Length: 122
Image (cartoon, rainbow, N blue to C red):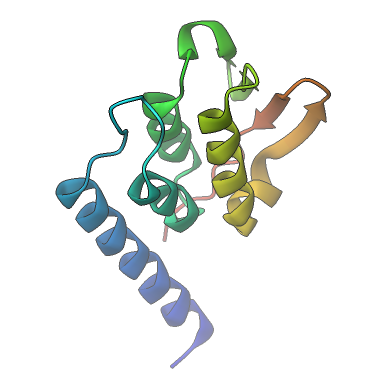
């Protein structure tokens, strides 16, 4: 099995797992904290869909009206010191390829800057 085929298989498996998690689980608990399933979705998201990754994360981000700004392909995200948002950042960091492709900067106080580098899907 060649490397490209293996990669495509891994992406397909990630997409199946994400679909299953979203379909069968709540993404936020009663206090608006991300569930384990939501954090798994973030960790599993394929690197070929950065914009989709950020759309999903924004949908569960607490205080997105205040702490989430988008400009072109840049995302300025602030955790507001809220532990649920900090958990989301931790899950984002565990998605190694996505983090390395898109993370630009961290500033004290929980401020992150990302620049989407969309990788074309084969």
